[in-house]
Image (cartoon, rainbow, N blue to C red; front, side, top):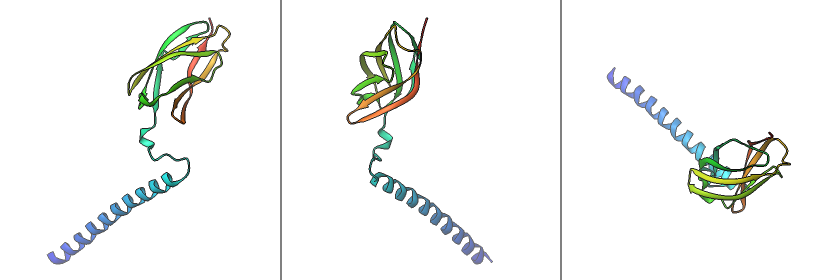
Length: 136
């Protein structure tokens, strides 16, 4: 009886190990396929990410220094906003998680939300509706 029980337990363990191996193989195969596709970067985990901007808005006609929080920000080569009324005066990377961006908002800038665009080499990273322009 013990031999039969040990045999069944051994089969179950082998089946579990097989399932785990197949799941890992499937993930590796999928990642290999995706990285081989044109336009899908192999360094996915190195992408820049922005988690927020402080302050999240500026008033028309003002100059403001923003703190951008996120990850992998050290590769930023240029900063822009989608609104024609915002001019980036300067930016400075403090560490991989923070950077300072000084902007000037035109008095004629249209109110509403706009996108933050970070450039790194040949890539651009757009963060949609992350910043707001307000009027007095």
